[in-house]
Image 1: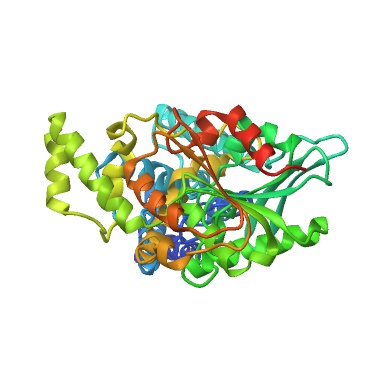
Image 2: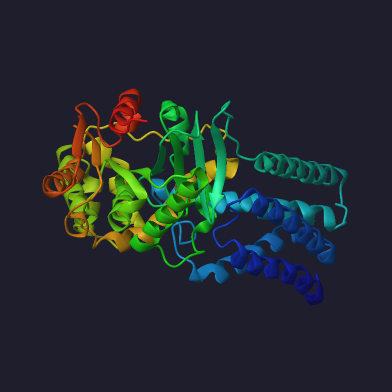
Length: 456
């Protein structure tokens, strides 16, 4: 190829890489973004193939795109865009992050270049093989486009409420057999967390007693695209999100007050929201309640390290000893907790309920990656929070549903905070055999408990 043809091949692909990095720095997160990415990438591939008139365009156009994309998004941080890690979570992030992005950009670009170069192979077999491969790539891309275009949906409820809605950047699933039932807003645990699947597969019975609004936290689930479209994630920004959704529900259903429930890490901004604006809430319910993440993580460190030593897990022991006690600067430093904490405490791994129509294909594919990106942005900013200092009292009823086998790192700080917490109606309900997620481990009992605590 001449230098002119090489430039004509590389420049459009590189320009599209820059635009894509500015437009979708973490890759396509919505169906619209994915479909536009496929269409534009295919068009760029055709242009590159025609400009080069060489099969080299099939390789060089995607290479130029990737190079420009990665250089442009160096300013963005998070596991999905940082250098890959050769760990279980690192491999998962590579596949569901860059791997999925490649399907929506590199595959159609290569297929477009294959059709666009218009230079026949020298032998019949090469022509046949080339056409078959280009055809297969096209069929795969078309099938992927159809699958991605299928929207999320939720089953209707006769005479009730069943909708997937948004308020600003934040997504909600709202379901209840009657709009007159008490309004319950649920905040999931991890940064960028989404428990929509849990609510549909295990806790659908709550819809008989409440209008249940399930929040996808900023950066996760159907709120994935909201990461980066607000001030840096912090306790204040998470509290502001909860208050914005609260006001939306109060206006939507004409209520002065609603019930707020927070799980695990999500219980920290949830209870702070109640503390700052108790006039908006009828009651607070905490489950798997977190209090002081720094203290919790240091207990996890001690317990996981002891478990690893007792079990002869030399590599894990060496890693934890090398890192020293938390807090740690890198999301991947917390991987031992994410992989082994439940095993160390003899608890079941948390369920991941993704097989529901309320999730799109992209939301399922990005479930862990978007959560880890949000964790990376928010978790270090929560290290100074201690509810024993931040929330010494709540002027509304405060109810807690805890597992009797809760991890020590969460159970100990909670016990001290709960003992000192002032509230006009404070109650603790313990499920003796449950761990960190009593609502998932004993859903029927959890539903019955909430319906008793908050009568219609």
